[in-house]
Length: 246
Image 1 (spheres, helix red, strand yellow):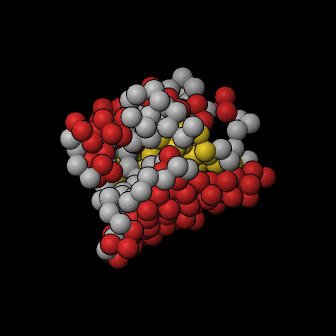
Image 2: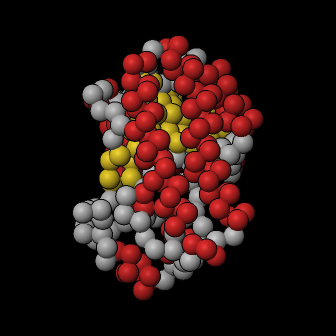
């Protein structure tokens, strides 16, 4: 019950890593808002964990503002914000990625962090405390070829995490990031280009522990970084990657 009495908003919480984080937070005693562009998926996880579902496009300023206001109305305060929602483009040479795909990756992976900060940080400052957790990627540390603009978006997120941590520390707000390797999530097939045994073997060969990240792995790491046990930890980008970045 490390998160007992705390409230959390998890974007992209309806599936994959986000769902794993929502489940773990609930196990640890938190009240959770499961925010997702897929309302059916969000509602399914919310029903499972006794949380609240919210339909949001994190690239929309109005949508993010409505999400934060709903969370504050529901919980009174929001102790934890997890920026987990993310997308990628299919593997291809960097110069061949369509402009509309580039724009969407940047809107969901980059602009969303700005938008949630814009609408959540004032309330956390007023409370004198809070934790923001950004879900980055090993792609931001050790990029794979042909995922160039996705890699860049996650590198941006790591830098944003560090600069947010420095600026917000005097306000009592901690900001950290998790960097998972590819995992058993809806994005896996897109990362690989095709989901075949051969392609899985190729990806797994780059991970010393020999397996993908799981939603449970991410939930465990997120629960620690968002708990009071990690009260001296801010500005880190924790690799949850089975040794991928070594």
